Amino acid sequence: MRSMLCCCVNSENNRKYAELDAKLARKMVESRRIYPGHRSLKSMDSIIMKFPKLREGLRNIRSVFETYDSDKNGTIDIEELKKCLEELKLSLSEEEVKGLYGWCDVDGSKGIQFNEFIVLLCLIYLLSKPSSESNTESKEMGPKLVESIFDPIVEVFLFLDKDGKGKLNKADVIKTLNNEDYPLERSPSHVTNMRFEEMDWGRKGKVGFREFLFAFMSWVGLDDAEDYMTS
Image (cartoon, rainbow, N blue to C red; front, top):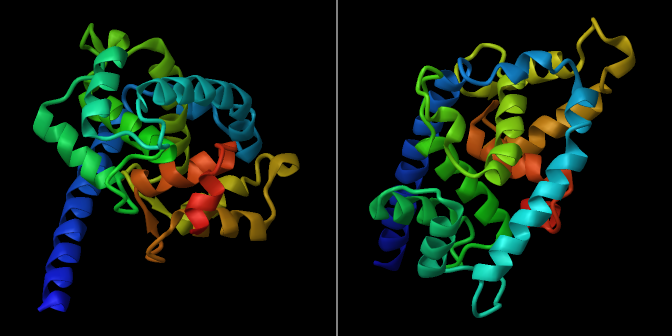
């Protein structure tokens, strides 16, 4: 009986992940029109140059997280999250926030850790951001702190997503990071293979934005992200 319940729970979780990943893939396809910055990226070196500014922004986000972690247990619960989102002026319906909270609590601890909090904030920011660049509010959506962190990350994903389908495939990622037009900035093959494997949790040869985001945090040097990825 217990095994049947576990199977049902796992099946439900897999369904939710599939729905979220499909929604994000569509968002990435739409985003190509409003994130022209991905065209300026040429190699892994041009991505790495963004890391110092991203680390600074992530430290500021950590301060926000610690402010709303009222019981100082290293996680925030759903009520603490709602207060945090109000402060950051990122709004979704209560049902959507609960859904994302469940999706991002990857280890099932019933609380969002900091690295999960980063992913959750990015998902809320993306899913609440208008897709049309003609929308006059699009450049005002979300506080500048959130925008300055997540927009460059989306641009990196779009740079690696050469076929524009909202998923990264191994051949394109390796080819992109080993761009023959920039021989001095080419990454060794074993490095590009390692980078892709860090993203490809299911070893399916395809990587969605959610998997990419968790891996990218460890590349940037987010505290404890690497330990989280290997746990």
